[in-house]
Image (cartoon, rainbow, N blue to C red; front, side):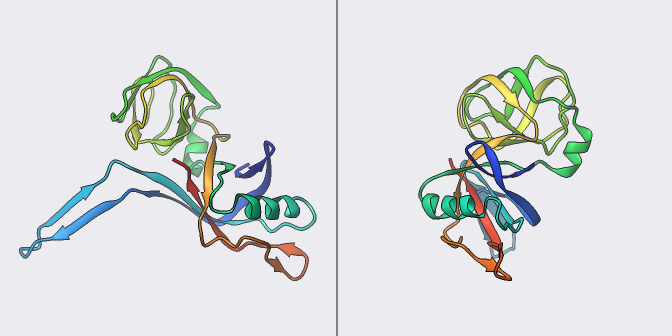
Length: 195
């Protein structure tokens, strides 16, 4: 179950429509001959734009408290959503042990062999950054995006319970919004990965 966490429990589930986007600054310019030149920066973060399941008596108070107290300057915690196709293709693996990688590269070496489909979001045990597998992995080297932000020697989590730290986007209402007087409905909110 994907959603916003408080005290380790999901208090607000993601609903649809939902988008998970990669925000990586890219500079683009076109020359007079219309040849395009692009340059992208090393930095990258994931952003989730989603509707939350409307709440009534269960957890509406906790969600409002989380939004007001965390606001835009203190991080909250949530479960990162996995691609639907990935969830059908992947085995029940939760952790692959012994991941090794060097900061700045897009490759992880793993001793385990198991199918981890392209598009799977993963997290490493020694830091909180979320990565995406870019090619089906079965054994050997795993290709990821973006490049590693730290050296890695540890475990790799690749299941439906990857927790990440986020900030509420500044456009998120810092309070409560009610629909029909009884259902708390925040509309569309955006969660920005904490780097």
